[in-house]
Image 1: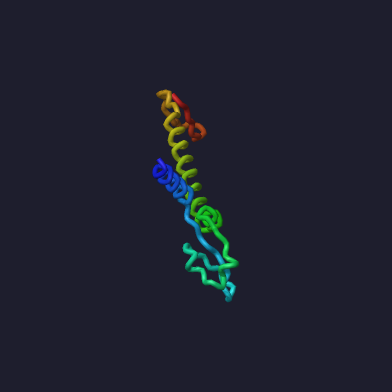
Image 2: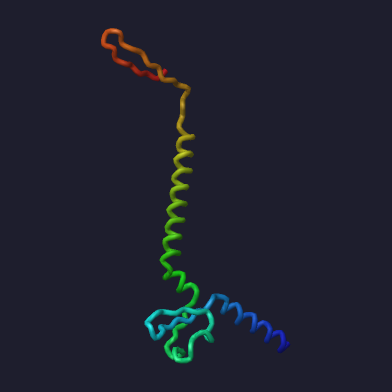
Length: 114
């Protein structure tokens, strides 16, 4: 029974840490360095690093934001096109046709639906 509880506990803890974790620090030249392994952070920067979750990086990524905005705009445009095509199909023709005649005295075109 203890073994089962231990296995279940390990599985639960592993699922909680499913999101990627990154470590961020500023080096001596002032550049921001982000790594996915704590052992990649030099010992002299270990006191100043910050833990960043994958979701936080995605929220700050301007390229991903632009990509998402472009995708949203494309989906909106496709929806508008589908709605326009559906509206065109719904237009009734009522079996009428356009008849154009010319008034012989004035030369004016007369358009009527018959």
